Amino acid sequence: MPPKKQVKEEKLLLGRPGNNLKAGIVGLANVGKSTLFQAITKCNLGNPANFPYATIEPEEARVLVPDQRFDWLCDHYKPKSKVPANLTVYDIAGLTRGASTGAGLGNAFLSHIRAVDAIFQVVRCFDDAEIIHVEGDVDPIRDLTIINEELRTKDIEFVEKALESLRKQTARGGQSLEMKKLKEEQATVERILQWLQDGKDIRSGEWAKKEIEVINPLQLLTAKSVVYLVNLSERDYVRQKNKHLPKVAEWVKTNSPNDPIIPLSVSLEERLTQFETEAEASEELKKIGTKSALPKVIVTMRQVLGLNSFFTTGEDEVRQWTIRKGTKAPQAAGVIHTDFEKTFIQVVVYNFDLLKEFGDEAAVKSDGKVMTKGKDYVVEDGDILLIKAGAAKA
Ligand SMILES: Nc1ncnc2c1ncn2[C@@H]1O[C@H](COP(=O)(O)OP(=O)(O)OP(=O)(O)O)[C@@H](O)[C@H]1O
Figure 1 (cartoon, rainbow, N blue to C red):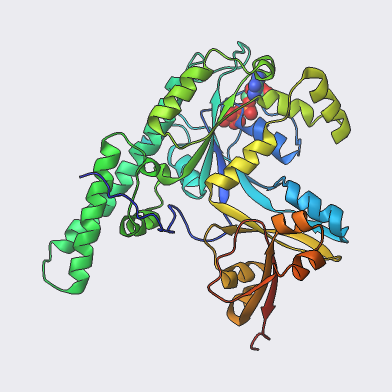
Figure 2: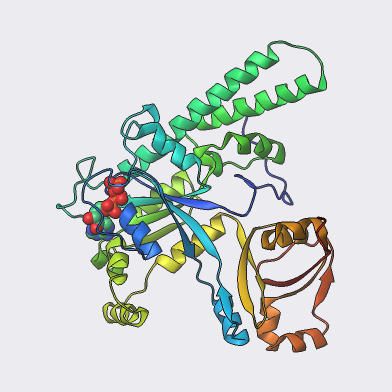
């Protein structure tokens, strides 16, 4: 039976709850993951080695999120301190065919993926005879299929184990409420297993709230959002043309239609970090007639993770905060300070768009657009908040 249509107003998201979400860079060995990680984090700790498995332990970095609204606010308030939003990115070791059965770094690799909330999947589309391809030649569709199958195989194994344990429990029989719940859970897990065995990823299904409640604790690999990063040579990136690119786009459309694809050139991004100043890098981009793909890479990841921003502003500090879509005011306040969630009284709020339109806060206020809201207020992307909270209990 196919999964039920999700109810429109359903707010439950696939994945872990919370606001501190992480993205991991995943792909076969030698496709450009470490170089991308270094370019993203702009920390050039030596050249990445040109051999598979240069990355043994996952590396973590906090990446600044580019946002024109934040820049505007900083220009407007000229604060002493500017704190932009960030995204945590992990560099994960290269996956090999057979990882799900323990080949290469096998299970260690897969457990690193389990620990992240979303995946940047790097697909090699650059031809360079000097750089060894673990599978022998450049064939992105084969690579995409390998990774997909490894992740799905691991999910199947995991779901089968969960099902086995549920079957043992329901075999005891009985009519209790707890047993009824277990049986329902078992039926959902059976549907999940069938979905995976049909060759489909969990994130491509439309699941009802009750099903998502069963899916989320399983932390399945194919439930995680994916942004495909198609790694081109610098030349192909500049001309936005590559013989593999249409096939990759077609594959993604067929296999996971909602996942974004971003073409980029990891070697160009890496080269840009070598310039001493941002102005020099911009000059280079102008000369070759292109833009860096990295801002789009980060912003897209925030979108697929279902993250929103709110701001706190003033002459002392302008700060961009990160929350999950659908977060209510007290929980947003809790991101600023855990005590604020418990002692929340109300929030004074107006959206950045209004501030920009009216020019300053006083004008927004005199037009009656500044609202005072209570604990049921759902914070919108771009809201500027002033939290009113009571004193924390000692
Ligand atoms: N677009 C590109 N064009 C040409 N060379 C590239 C491109 N992207 C990456 N490379 C080169 O490919 C080599 C492998 O890259 P990198 O070490 O980042 O791969 P990796 O996926 O992290 O590998 P591993 O999983 O083994 O750690 C490096 O020499 C890098 O400079």
